[in-house]
Amino acid sequence: MIKNPTNINIKSCIQLYLIFSVFLIINGCAQNDAYRINFAPCTFNQPGDCSQNALQYYAPSQAAEYRLGFVEFDDQGQLRQREQMEAVLDNYFTVAAKDDVLLILFIHGWHHSARPGDDNIHEFRKLLEKIARIENTSANLNSHAPRKILGLYVGWRGESIEIPILNKITFWERKNTAHEIGLEGVTELLLKMEEITNIKMGIASTEEPKTRNNRLIVIGHSFGGTVLYTALQQIMADRFIDSRPNKTYSDDAKGFGDLVILMNPAFEAIRFATLYDISQQDCRNYFPSQLPRMVILTSEKDYATRFAFPLGRSFSTIFETHTTSKRHHCTANGPKEIFIKQGEADRNAIGHFKPYHTHELVPATTKQLRSDDAKYSHLKNIWSKQINEGTLHFEDVDLIHLGNTKPLNPYLNIYVDGKLIPDHIKIWGDSISDFIRDLIVLSSLPVQNGKH
Image 1 (cartoon, rainbow, N blue to C red):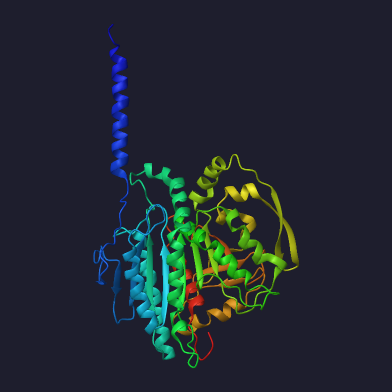
Image 2 (image 1 turned 60 degrees about the vertical axis):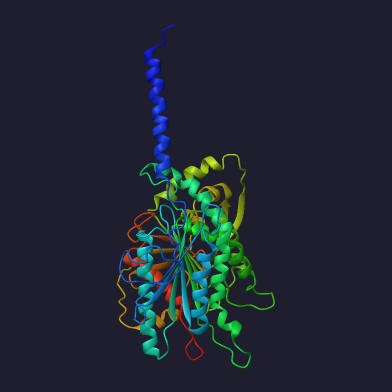
């Protein structure tokens, strides 16, 4: 029997296509090993320096001085190398035992990693340098030693396939990985970072108590925000409940460290329900000293979480059941009943779920230039005077309270004008960077003469 040559050609083409596809995927996979395998400190002067070093010094003994460490995790949420984390944190513990420190941690998101040259690393360096210069100016004007700026970049495989276009299909696979990492080793790292800020309190004698001037700020972008929120959700709920009235005492609401910032985070709004509910309970009033504990920033032009996210969740939740929950907003006229559709909250990302919005961030009508440290020290006073549906003017942006929560509610879910953050990835524009700088300064001002 003579075989049809056309069928043979079709089968051969299919086989070649499959072989070629497998070849592309295998060769297009992102590196699955640690990038920062040298644990010796290295001085960073210019791009390309210290490409394998997990601990780097920048501008030692200068106004822009900071340290940058790297800790990397695999897809199962396990440390790539425990020695890497220990080398960085041991160095930071030693510094914090002697000097006051400001620790700033950043977890990157989709399409990024700890690879040398990643633009998230470059932008994080710029933020650390900016904070270092502000700290140095403040110290000079107030006659005290500047705190050491200690940065930590948390790396993971934000990209599993590096082939352009094809890598777009990894959104849900990387989302699952982000939750896995948040449930595993990242929590240990975060708690150890918090230990560093408290080290002086532990070694101080009862006769000579020390003021806690160490501060910890943690930032997550995209799936890095997913990692961070997954790791901290229960911790933050527990600490908030401890501050409620009618317990042992009433106090400012606590969070993790001094501030958590989530930028274009990619997780479901329903995961935020518990924190939202407890912060709205009884429409409690917050003390003027209450500082923000978690700030969520989502661009209206973040189409990855605005459109692709709910589309994907529509398929993954198709067999789940949802109800409608009765909740309330805390308006100027008292509680206002609202209804939360669980299905919508489960399909939409937190930043695009309107019932949970607390603020809007828009370009400033008038730019507020800052030329000296005195205006930074006034941030806390400005923050304490918030009013329902009022506007706070920052250097280049205006923060508008939407009237859905009590002023000074420590959880801010901010919808950001697309002019400030143009898409899911481009989060480091000057206006947003300056706003984040102000939030960090606000939450980390040292104590001076017994006062913040």
